[in-house]
Amino acid sequence: MAIQLLPPQLANQIAAGEVVERPASVVKELVENSLDAGATRVNIDIERGGSKLIRIRDNGAGIPKEELALALSRHATSKVHSLDDLEAILSFGFRGEALASISSVARLSLTSKTAEQTEAWQAFAEGSQMDVKVTPAAHPQGSTIEVVDLFFNTPARRRFLKSDKTEFSHIDEWLKRIAIARSDIHFTLTHNGKQVRQYRPANTDIQHQQRMGQICGRQFAENALNVACEHDGLSLKGYLQSPFDTVVSDSNYFYVNGRLVRDKLVNHAVKQAFAEQGIEHLPGYVLMLSLDPHQVDVNVHPAKHEVRFHQSRYVHDFILQALQSALIQIHQVLPTVDNS
Ligand code: ADP
Ligand code: MG
Image (cartoon, rainbow, N blue to C red):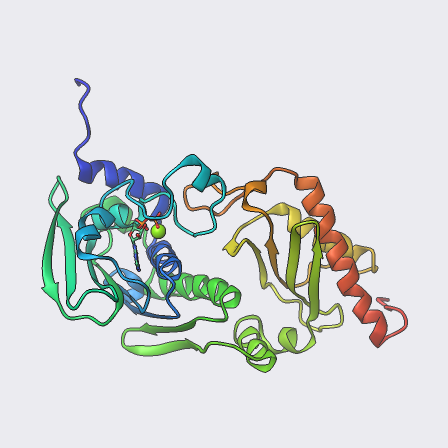
Protein backbone atom coordinates (compact mmCIF):
# COMPACT_ATOMS: atom_id res chain seq x y z
CA MET A 1 0.00 0.00 0.00
CA ALA A 2 1.17 3.52 -0.75
CA ILE A 3 1.75 5.93 2.13
CA GLN A 4 -1.31 8.11 2.76
CA LEU A 5 -2.49 10.42 5.52
CA LEU A 6 -5.21 8.78 7.60
CA PRO A 7 -8.65 10.42 7.37
CA PRO A 8 -9.33 12.37 10.62
CA GLN A 9 -11.94 9.95 11.95
CA LEU A 10 -9.64 6.95 11.58
CA ALA A 11 -6.72 8.83 13.15
CA ASN A 12 -8.99 9.72 16.07
CA GLN A 13 -10.25 6.15 16.39
CA ILE A 14 -6.67 4.95 16.64
CA ALA A 15 -5.95 7.57 19.32
CA ALA A 16 -9.15 6.51 21.08
CA GLY A 17 -7.59 3.09 21.54
CA GLU A 18 -5.29 4.62 24.12
CA VAL A 19 -7.70 6.74 26.15
CA VAL A 20 -11.17 5.27 25.62
CA GLU A 21 -11.00 1.78 26.96
CA ARG A 22 -14.53 1.53 28.36
CA PRO A 23 -17.43 3.74 29.52
CA ALA A 24 -15.61 4.57 32.77
CA SER A 25 -12.73 6.10 30.82
CA VAL A 26 -15.21 8.34 28.97
CA VAL A 27 -16.70 9.44 32.29
CA LYS A 28 -13.23 10.13 33.66
CA GLU A 29 -12.24 12.33 30.72
CA LEU A 30 -15.52 14.25 30.70
CA VAL A 31 -15.68 14.85 34.44
CA GLU A 32 -12.07 16.02 34.40
CA ASN A 33 -13.04 18.50 31.68
CA SER A 34 -15.90 19.76 33.88
CA LEU A 35 -13.54 20.25 36.80
CA ASP A 36 -10.97 21.98 34.59
CA ALA A 37 -13.82 24.32 33.54
CA GLY A 38 -14.36 25.30 37.17
CA ALA A 39 -17.68 23.49 37.65
CA THR A 40 -19.01 23.15 41.20
CA ARG A 41 -21.78 20.78 40.20
CA VAL A 42 -21.49 17.74 37.95
CA ASN A 43 -24.41 15.44 37.11
CA ILE A 44 -23.66 12.10 35.53
CA ASP A 45 -26.42 10.08 33.88
CA ILE A 46 -25.69 6.58 32.65
CA GLU A 47 -27.85 4.15 30.71
CA ARG A 48 -27.05 0.48 30.20
CA GLY A 49 -23.66 0.64 31.88
CA GLY A 50 -22.70 3.58 29.66
CA SER A 51 -22.89 1.66 26.40
CA LYS A 52 -26.24 3.30 25.57
CA LEU A 53 -25.73 6.74 27.12
CA ILE A 54 -23.22 8.76 29.11
CA ARG A 55 -24.39 12.29 29.85
CA ILE A 56 -22.32 14.76 31.87
CA ARG A 57 -23.86 18.08 32.79
CA ASP A 58 -21.83 20.81 34.50
CA ASN A 59 -22.12 24.44 35.55
CA GLY A 60 -18.58 25.32 34.48
CA ALA A 61 -17.33 28.13 32.26
CA GLY A 62 -18.81 26.71 29.03
CA ILE A 63 -17.31 26.84 25.56
CA PRO A 64 -17.85 29.88 23.31
CA LYS A 65 -19.72 29.18 20.08
CA GLU A 66 -16.65 29.95 17.92
CA GLU A 67 -14.61 27.31 19.78
CA LEU A 68 -17.09 24.44 19.72
CA ALA A 69 -15.76 22.98 16.48
CA LEU A 70 -12.18 23.26 17.70
CA ALA A 71 -13.05 21.55 20.98
CA LEU A 72 -14.05 18.49 18.97
CA SER A 73 -10.87 18.36 16.89
CA ARG A 74 -7.73 16.56 17.78
CA HIS A 75 -4.79 18.36 19.40
CA ALA A 76 -7.03 21.30 20.26
CA THR A 77 -6.83 22.43 23.87
CA SER A 78 -7.26 25.63 25.84
CA LYS A 79 -4.98 24.35 28.60
CA VAL A 80 -1.45 24.41 27.20
CA HIS A 81 0.10 26.64 24.60
CA SER A 82 3.79 25.98 25.08
CA LEU A 83 6.25 23.48 26.49
CA ASP A 84 6.60 25.75 29.52
CA ASP A 85 2.86 25.40 30.17
CA LEU A 86 3.12 21.62 29.92
CA GLU A 87 5.98 21.50 32.39
CA ALA A 88 3.98 23.46 34.95
CA ILE A 89 0.60 21.83 34.27
CA LEU A 90 -2.04 21.77 36.99
CA SER A 91 -5.14 21.04 34.92
CA PHE A 92 -6.27 17.47 34.30
CA GLY A 93 -6.30 17.91 30.54
CA PHE A 94 -3.50 18.90 28.21
CA ARG A 95 -3.53 16.43 25.31
CA GLY A 96 -6.55 17.88 23.54
CA GLU A 97 -7.56 14.39 22.49
CA ALA A 98 -10.48 13.26 24.61
CA LEU A 99 -13.41 14.87 22.83
CA ALA A 100 -12.02 14.08 19.38
CA SER A 101 -11.31 10.48 20.35
CA ILE A 102 -14.67 9.90 21.97
CA SER A 103 -16.60 11.51 19.12
CA SER A 104 -14.87 9.20 16.65
CA VAL A 105 -16.16 6.07 18.42
CA ALA A 106 -19.62 7.24 19.56
CA ARG A 107 -22.32 9.78 18.73
CA LEU A 108 -21.11 12.72 20.77
CA SER A 109 -22.88 16.02 21.11
CA LEU A 110 -21.66 19.02 23.00
CA THR A 111 -24.07 21.71 24.21
CA SER A 112 -22.68 24.74 25.93
CA LYS A 113 -23.26 28.30 27.01
CA THR A 114 -20.77 30.77 28.44
CA ALA A 115 -21.67 33.56 30.87
CA GLU A 116 -21.26 36.17 28.12
CA GLN A 117 -23.50 34.48 25.57
CA THR A 118 -27.25 34.93 25.55
CA GLU A 119 -27.83 31.70 23.62
CA ALA A 120 -26.54 28.16 23.92
CA TRP A 121 -25.13 26.15 21.01
CA GLN A 122 -24.83 22.51 20.23
CA ALA A 123 -22.11 20.82 18.18
CA PHE A 124 -21.47 17.36 16.84
CA ALA A 125 -18.94 15.88 14.43
CA GLU A 126 -19.80 13.42 11.70
CA GLY A 127 -18.31 11.50 8.79
CA SER A 128 -14.76 10.45 8.06
CA GLN A 129 -13.65 14.10 7.91
CA MET A 130 -15.39 14.76 11.24
CA ASP A 131 -17.07 17.92 9.96
CA VAL A 132 -18.64 19.79 12.83
CA LYS A 133 -22.25 21.04 12.72
CA VAL A 134 -23.26 23.81 15.12
CA THR A 135 -26.93 24.57 15.83
CA PRO A 136 -28.78 26.74 18.40
CA ALA A 137 -29.86 25.01 21.60
CA ALA A 138 -31.28 25.65 25.06
CA HIS A 139 -28.90 25.30 28.02
CA PRO A 140 -28.02 27.25 31.17
CA GLN A 141 -24.41 28.35 31.70
CA GLY A 142 -22.13 25.33 31.54
CA SER A 143 -21.87 22.30 29.30
CA THR A 144 -23.60 19.02 28.62
CA ILE A 145 -21.76 16.30 26.77
CA GLU A 146 -23.83 13.39 25.55
CA VAL A 147 -22.18 10.21 24.39
CA VAL A 148 -24.61 7.78 22.78
CA ASP A 149 -23.90 4.23 21.51
CA LEU A 150 -20.28 3.99 22.53
CA PHE A 151 -18.18 1.93 20.09
CA PHE A 152 -21.16 1.57 17.66
CA ASN A 153 -18.72 1.89 14.76
CA THR A 154 -15.85 -0.10 16.27
CA PRO A 155 -17.42 -3.55 16.77
CA ALA A 156 -14.18 -5.12 17.97
CA ARG A 157 -14.09 -2.71 20.91
CA ARG A 158 -17.78 -3.04 21.59
CA ARG A 159 -17.36 -6.79 22.01
CA PHE A 160 -14.90 -6.17 24.83
CA LEU A 161 -17.52 -4.44 26.96
CA LYS A 162 -18.54 -6.44 30.02
CA SER A 163 -22.08 -6.59 31.46
CA ASP A 164 -23.90 -3.32 32.16
CA LYS A 165 -23.49 -4.00 35.85
CA THR A 166 -19.73 -4.43 35.59
CA GLU A 167 -19.26 -1.40 33.38
CA PHE A 168 -21.39 0.68 35.74
CA SER A 169 -19.38 -0.47 38.74
CA HIS A 170 -16.22 0.80 37.03
CA ILE A 171 -17.89 4.18 36.59
CA ASP A 172 -19.02 4.21 40.22
CA GLU A 173 -15.53 3.27 41.39
CA TRP A 174 -13.94 5.94 39.29
CA LEU A 175 -16.33 8.58 40.59
CA LYS A 176 -15.41 7.64 44.16
CA ARG A 177 -11.79 8.38 43.41
CA ILE A 178 -12.51 11.85 42.18
CA ALA A 179 -15.24 12.58 44.73
CA ILE A 180 -12.93 11.89 47.64
CA ALA A 181 -10.30 14.28 46.34
CA ARG A 182 -12.80 16.96 45.34
CA SER A 183 -15.13 17.17 48.29
CA ASP A 184 -15.94 20.76 47.26
CA ILE A 185 -17.92 19.49 44.25
CA HIS A 186 -21.52 18.32 44.21
CA PHE A 187 -21.77 15.09 42.19
CA THR A 188 -24.79 13.01 41.32
CA LEU A 189 -24.76 9.69 39.49
CA THR A 190 -27.81 7.98 38.00
CA HIS A 191 -28.13 4.61 36.27
CA ASN A 192 -31.12 3.86 34.04
CA GLY A 193 -32.98 6.82 35.54
CA LYS A 194 -32.38 5.89 39.20
CA GLN A 195 -30.13 7.99 41.41
CA VAL A 196 -27.33 5.78 42.70
CA ARG A 197 -24.99 8.32 44.34
CA GLN A 198 -25.16 11.81 45.61
CA TYR A 199 -22.04 13.44 46.99
CA ARG A 200 -22.91 16.77 48.56
CA PRO A 201 -20.25 19.44 48.83
CA ALA A 202 -18.39 19.23 52.12
CA ASN A 203 -17.41 22.41 53.94
CA THR A 204 -17.19 21.35 57.57
CA ASP A 205 -15.11 18.59 59.18
CA ILE A 206 -18.28 16.59 59.82
CA GLN A 207 -19.29 16.84 56.16
CA HIS A 208 -15.79 15.73 55.10
CA GLN A 209 -16.06 12.77 57.39
CA GLN A 210 -19.47 11.93 55.93
CA ARG A 211 -18.12 11.94 52.41
CA MET A 212 -15.17 9.81 53.49
CA GLY A 213 -17.58 7.40 55.15
CA GLN A 214 -19.68 7.17 51.98
CA ILE A 215 -16.60 6.25 49.98
CA CYS A 216 -14.16 4.47 52.29
CA GLY A 217 -16.56 3.00 54.82
CA ARG A 218 -17.67 4.31 58.23
CA GLN A 219 -15.03 2.62 60.34
CA PHE A 220 -12.20 4.04 58.23
CA ALA A 221 -13.74 7.52 58.31
CA GLU A 222 -14.34 7.54 62.06
CA ASN A 223 -10.94 6.28 63.17
CA ALA A 224 -8.63 7.53 60.42
CA LEU A 225 -5.42 9.26 61.43
CA ASN A 226 -4.93 12.71 60.07
CA VAL A 227 -1.93 13.27 57.84
CA ALA A 228 -0.76 16.85 57.40
CA CYS A 229 2.84 17.64 56.71
CA GLU A 230 4.68 20.34 54.81
CA HIS A 231 8.34 20.71 54.04
CA ASP A 232 10.37 22.55 51.46
CA GLY A 233 7.61 22.97 48.87
CA LEU A 234 6.17 19.47 49.44
CA SER A 235 2.87 18.94 51.17
CA LEU A 236 1.07 15.74 52.11
CA LYS A 237 -2.49 15.81 53.40
CA GLY A 238 -5.07 13.14 53.95
CA TYR A 239 -5.99 10.12 56.01
CA LEU A 240 -4.39 6.89 57.04
CA GLN A 241 -6.50 4.00 58.26
CA SER A 242 -6.09 3.33 61.95
CA PRO A 243 -3.99 0.23 62.65
CA PHE A 244 -6.69 -0.80 65.14
CA ASP A 245 -9.51 -1.02 62.58
CA THR A 246 -10.87 -4.55 62.43
CA VAL A 247 -11.50 -4.48 58.69
CA VAL A 248 -8.55 -3.59 56.50
CA SER A 249 -9.83 -1.18 53.87
CA ASP A 250 -8.82 -1.52 50.26
CA SER A 251 -9.38 2.21 49.72
CA ASN A 252 -5.91 3.14 48.55
CA TYR A 253 -6.04 6.53 46.91
CA PHE A 254 -3.01 8.62 46.07
CA TYR A 255 -3.17 11.97 44.31
CA VAL A 256 -0.41 14.12 42.96
CA ASN A 257 -1.47 17.74 42.50
CA GLY A 258 -5.07 16.56 42.47
CA ARG A 259 -4.50 13.81 39.90
CA LEU A 260 -5.16 10.23 40.95
CA VAL A 261 -2.10 8.16 40.12
CA ARG A 262 -0.83 4.66 40.62
CA ASP A 263 2.57 4.69 42.15
CA LYS A 264 4.53 2.01 43.97
CA LEU A 265 6.34 4.68 45.93
CA VAL A 266 3.40 5.51 48.17
CA ASN A 267 2.48 1.88 48.91
CA HIS A 268 6.09 1.28 49.82
CA ALA A 269 6.18 4.24 52.19
CA VAL A 270 2.87 3.28 53.85
CA LYS A 271 3.98 -0.33 54.31
CA GLN A 272 7.29 0.77 55.75
CA ALA A 273 5.66 3.20 58.20
CA PHE A 274 3.30 0.45 59.40
CA ALA A 275 6.05 -2.19 59.54
CA GLU A 276 8.02 0.10 61.85
CA GLN A 277 5.04 -0.18 64.21
CA GLY A 278 5.12 -3.95 63.94
CA ILE A 279 2.08 -4.10 61.63
CA GLU A 280 2.40 -6.11 58.48
CA HIS A 281 -0.72 -5.24 56.45
CA LEU A 282 -1.24 -2.40 53.99
CA PRO A 283 -3.95 -0.14 55.47
CA GLY A 284 -6.37 2.04 53.57
CA TYR A 285 -5.23 5.54 52.81
CA VAL A 286 -6.28 8.71 51.05
CA LEU A 287 -3.20 10.82 50.48
CA MET A 288 -2.79 14.01 48.53
CA LEU A 289 0.64 15.15 47.61
CA SER A 290 1.20 18.67 46.34
CA LEU A 291 4.48 19.82 44.91
CA ASP A 292 5.90 22.21 42.39
CA PRO A 293 4.57 20.90 39.05
CA HIS A 294 8.06 21.29 37.60
CA GLN A 295 9.16 18.48 39.93
CA VAL A 296 6.86 15.91 38.34
CA ASP A 297 6.27 14.74 34.79
CA VAL A 298 2.59 13.94 34.17
CA ASN A 299 3.00 13.27 30.47
CA VAL A 300 4.10 9.65 30.79
CA HIS A 301 0.89 7.75 30.13
CA PRO A 302 -1.96 8.55 27.68
CA ALA A 303 -4.62 8.10 30.36
CA LYS A 304 -2.27 9.89 32.81
CA HIS A 305 -2.43 7.13 35.43
CA GLU A 306 1.26 7.43 36.07
CA VAL A 307 3.66 10.23 36.84
CA ARG A 308 7.42 10.48 37.16
CA PHE A 309 9.02 12.37 40.02
CA HIS A 310 12.30 14.07 39.31
CA GLN A 311 13.52 13.25 42.82
CA SER A 312 11.61 10.13 43.72
CA ARG A 313 13.82 9.12 46.66
CA TYR A 314 13.31 12.52 48.23
CA VAL A 315 9.53 12.35 47.71
CA HIS A 316 9.40 8.85 49.16
CA ASP A 317 11.30 9.88 52.27
CA PHE A 318 9.09 12.92 52.73
CA ILE A 319 5.95 10.75 52.54
CA LEU A 320 7.45 8.27 54.98
CA GLN A 321 8.21 11.03 57.48
CA ALA A 322 4.73 12.49 57.14
CA LEU A 323 3.23 9.06 57.86
CA GLN A 324 5.56 8.46 60.78
CA SER A 325 4.41 11.67 62.39
CA ALA A 326 0.77 10.74 61.74
CA LEU A 327 1.32 7.39 63.41
CA ILE A 328 2.55 9.15 66.55
CA GLN A 329 -1.15 9.95 67.11
CA ILE A 330 -1.84 6.32 68.01
CA HIS A 331 0.59 6.50 70.90
CA GLN A 332 -1.45 9.35 72.25
CA VAL A 333 -4.36 6.90 72.47
CA LEU A 334 -2.46 3.89 73.78
CA PRO A 335 1.07 3.81 75.22
CA THR A 336 2.30 1.06 72.86
CA VAL A 337 0.88 -0.79 69.90
CA ASP A 338 0.39 -4.40 70.83
CA ASN A 339 0.01 -6.33 67.62
CA SER A 340 0.42 -9.82 69.09
P1 ADP B 1 -8.06 18.69 26.95
O1 ADP B 1 -8.89 18.48 28.17
O2 ADP B 1 -6.81 17.87 26.98
O3 ADP B 1 -7.80 20.13 26.65
P2 ADP B 1 -10.37 17.67 25.52
O4 ADP B 1 -10.52 17.02 24.19
O5 ADP B 1 -10.80 16.90 26.72
O6 ADP B 1 -8.86 18.11 25.67
O7 ADP B 1 -11.17 19.05 25.50
C1 ADP B 1 -10.85 20.00 24.49
C2 ADP B 1 -11.18 21.42 24.95
O8 ADP B 1 -12.60 21.57 25.04
C3 ADP B 1 -10.66 21.77 26.34
O9 ADP B 1 -9.33 22.26 26.30
C4 ADP B 1 -11.66 22.83 26.81
O10 ADP B 1 -11.29 24.10 26.35
C5 ADP B 1 -12.95 22.44 26.12
N1 ADP B 1 -13.87 21.69 27.01
C6 ADP B 1 -14.10 20.36 27.02
N2 ADP B 1 -15.03 20.02 27.94
C7 ADP B 1 -15.43 21.18 28.54
C8 ADP B 1 -16.37 21.51 29.58
N3 ADP B 1 -17.12 20.58 30.20
N4 ADP B 1 -16.50 22.82 29.92
C9 ADP B 1 -15.76 23.78 29.30
N5 ADP B 1 -14.84 23.52 28.32
C10 ADP B 1 -14.67 22.25 27.94
MG1 MG C 1 -9.86 16.73 28.66
